[in-house]
Image (tube, rainbow, N blue to C red):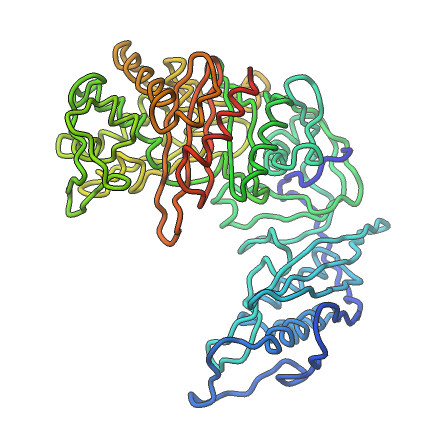
Length: 553
């Protein structure tokens, strides 16, 4: 399967369950001279403490490094019980550390700690994975956190599956054996191979393609160390993931709609931000031309579930115009504040527009212009609009890999009002919002897809109706005006031709900065992006989307 990495597979496997002994290799690099046995008993056990004996306060560097080194030394020495006793969840730690040797068949482990940061200690993992007559070296980086135990205040490792491997989640397992699903060789629209070496963002996409098409594409499975997902990960639509190939299978071929030039451009754009995601579509067909995430462990672009902020106003506007509650050139209220359902809503910087039109409120992203219409709406109006016109929230998209298809739940009172501006219970991702712009540009919802439905005969989702010609014309004019004179103007200034855009900033509890959103179209291209914790969409996600619209020609 060449240089394809991190492919997904299903769990029709033959996991090895023979026990192995982890080699004893004492590694203390990165720590000071703090004794391996300092700060506690050699076997990692503790005696009961009275309330007066419970330690409190911040952990010292010596407590963190000492605990981390004792844990890592016990783990690499095969002393599972001792290592587990140094955690705050000994039973769960015992099960996963035991499986690491027996099911994953990892032996000769060396764990080398790095420099601590606060209570976190990074460490390098090196070992050998063996299956029958095949062996291969394993290397990856991990991290653990030391905290005070709840009962005695002694320092312990905060246990979570990611301590064993950074991509493990609750219920997941590491297994080495014959993979049940053959690998796939994914091709771009020009016939070139898609690999994570060239396109790092595509790791989760390749996982999903293998899961969906591995058995249909005619390949043969090899032997692999892989993450087999548990129930919680399956609920989140996470695919199994290959960690290490011991013997290559024979891949089948899957053709995708991805554009190599746009994919490369998308990878380069999101790399400029810490937590950015973007999707590019072709409105006339629904083909997905690019998908990229700066964080590669989870496909936020396809599977994220985030409040879309004011980009949701595209959908809300279409509803208000249809219901004669707003008109592009009609006077529309945009006060500093508007209260509804016990909540007081306001605009960014508490601005107001006196005697302005609905187009002006849309272009400046006036929250109260939308919230003020809540008293005229039924609780399910927005839900129906999203489903019937934009194909969202039906959980029926089949693009070729797992996706989250948006959610606009029926709400009442203040949460319903908040939904009108993309807050409340509304949840979307860049794929969903790129589809919204594509629907406006083309005039009809076409379900996005990564693999042509002709490849496997699957039926694509449809919307039950389209917008009237008048509503569509007003919506396009408002998005065009926003791209030229509104909050999207700076980002879209260098984008020529027929264009439209909408910005968004979604407040998230506990975040100092909102998530920045941007959705736009130009010609037969539509795109949307989000930069989490980035700030206003026009200055964060906007330049990413605009650059891709230009790159697509």
